[in-house]
Image 1 (tube, helix red, strand yellow):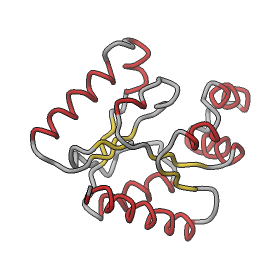
Image 2 (cartoon, helix red, strand yellow):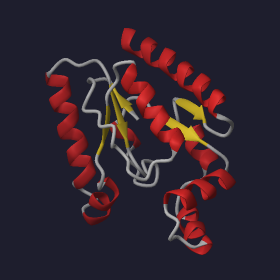
Image 3 (cartoon, rainbow, N blue to C red):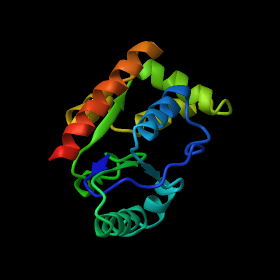
Length: 165
């Protein structure tokens, strides 16, 4: 998810449970000079305080970066569509994969989850085709690593065009 206000903090330990592709994606953005900002407890903030929490933090960060004159920030927002937070961002990037891949990756991230728990979590999310339709850019993460690398390069070109505008 993007807003045109600057590069923000990047942490190589951004997501302890991230699968290989997610780490590759954020690291490639980092190498090109883009920052990735994530609030690790964003979802729990939202659930505890839907009028503040992540929305207030996003607004605060955006104002801070805009005041510094930074051109672009990449913000990692879990459950963006589910929390109806799309309007806070100028552009939205969705990283897409198949439902089977989503289940498999969830199991890899948290081996303690049962198939039923994984099914409940996926059922609670908005279906991927709807997220894709609501995105300004879709990264297809449903093939091998070489394909993902080409998708990342395509994204980086798109980001460069955004910076020019």
